[in-house]
Image (cartoon, rainbow, N blue to C red; front, top):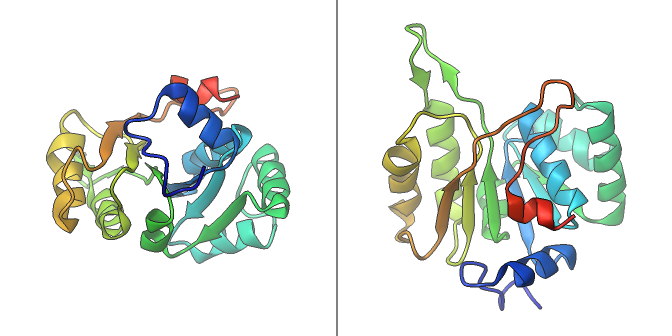
Length: 195
């Protein structure tokens, strides 16, 4: 099964699980900081081929060159092993990584401005870059913490700037949830079923 033949928007769960385990398509995680690195690890542990996309060159180099980087030790070990196996690469070319993937996870920080309101500038910038590489039959999952309505009212219109509409791609909000003691990202049931 090649990247071009699987329409994951219409595929059955079993087909998607098999495709992930067989590395039939790539998953890009945009933002490989604290939360994003755990999302990358979860997909890798499920058997996926993953591209870590980040504007921070130091993170990208740490992954590709198997350096220590700012990652927790267990994440670093997974990254080192999966880079060696050819299952993980990292890049600063976010749009290019998105264009090469079927599943896109966005995990960028959403900070507060001086008045305590959500500052969505980093998110908007990341989503704009994602839109430049987004293809039909892709799934975009937003992991960044945002308020109700942000996915529909902010993220979706930016993704549609490239001419695609919802239905050409799927958009989901999957809020990050890290268990404080285990530092493990809670992931969608479909991904958990792949393990």
